[in-house]
Image (cartoon, rainbow, N blue to C red; front, side, top):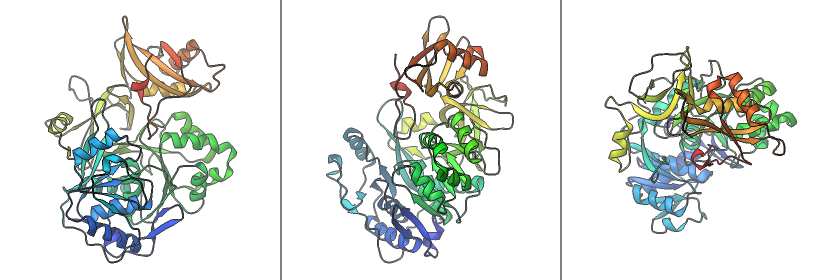
Length: 480
C-alpha cells in the first residue's frame, strides 16, 4: 500500500497546505487535524461529508481517507429527495460537518461528527490496498436517480500522478480555485491534487475575478476553473490591469468540466499572452486526456491521452475509428487504472457501462486530429445530430456561433425533421436582445466556417441558457 499523501504522513512540515480565506493549515497542522478525524471515524465503511467550500470539508475528506474509509461528498444544494436517495444508497455510518452547520432533515437520523481543524497527535493511516474505495461520488444520468461511482485509491493515484507528468506539477506549485468540493474537479484535482504533490491550495470560497487577481499576484502559480469562470475573466480583463498581470504571470491556467468556447480562449490569450489548457474527465474515469504543459494549447481540443490511459473512438456499429482526420465521429471509450470500480448497488448499470474487454463507454463523442489531439463534439445522447445522412457534433457548431459578434451564449440541439431526419436548432442568447442577429445571418456564418450541412435550420432566442452548478448547459431543458 502506497501513501496517498507522503507530505502529510512521512514528515509533515510547516509549509502551508490549505488556505480558505484567512484560515490556513500547515502540513503538520493538517496531519494532526485529519488524524484526529480519522480516529473518530475509524471502522466505518463509508462516511458522508457535508461538502461546503470550507477548511472543514478538506480536513474531513483527508481524515476519512487516512482511516481507510470511503468519503461520500454531499452537495449542500441538493434537494431533500436527492439527499435521501444518496443516504439510503450509500448507507454512511456517520456524517462529517463543520461545527454550526445546519443539516437538512434527511440527515437527522445519522450520527454527526463535527470536524475540528485543530487536532493533536500524528496520523495513523489504515492498512488498506490500492483497490480499496476512496470516494463514492454521485453522478446524475439522463434518467433515474444519481448513481454512486465507487472510486478506488489506485484511481486517485493514477490520475493525480498522470496530471503531475502532463502539467509538470510539483510541490512548489500553489493552486488557486473557487470550485465546489462535492465533485471530482474541485475535490480530487483541486484539493487532493496539491496535497499529493506536497504543494499548497488557496480556495477562494466563492469565485471572483478580484480573488483570482489577488492570489495570482500573491504567489499562486496555477488556476483551475470552469468555462463560466473563464468567461467572466475574459469579460473583466479589459478593465482590470491587476487581473491581466496575474494571469500573465501564472504558470498554468486549466479549464474543465465543459468545453471552453474558442472566443474566450482567444480573448484571454490576446490580453495576457497565456493560453488556457483544457482537459477531459468524468466522475467515473477521473482524468482521461489533457493538453500538456509542454504541448500546444490548441483551442477547441482537450489534448492527448494521459500516461496510462488507453483511448479509442468507436462507431455505432462497434467498429473502431482508425481515421485521425478531424472529421470521423465516434464515441470515446477508455481503459486504464484511472477508472472507477462500479456503480454502488447497481450491477446492471456497471455491466452496461463496460465492454467485455474492459473499455468504459463514456457516452461522449469526439474526433481525432491527425496528431492525436482529441476534439470532443458533444454527448452521444444529446449532442450527436444525424441530419441529411451526416453525423454532426453540436460542439463545433456552438463554437462557430460564439465567434459571431452578436452572440453571447449558444447551444445546439437536434429535433425531428421529416426530410433531414433531424434538423439543427441553435439556441442563442444575443449580445443585444433588442437587435439580435437574424437566423439567415447566423446560418450563413456557420456554413462559411464549417460546412453548409452544419448550418442551423432554426434559431431560437433566449435571455439565458439553463446551466447546472458546474456551468454545464442543461440541454434537456431546451424545448421548443
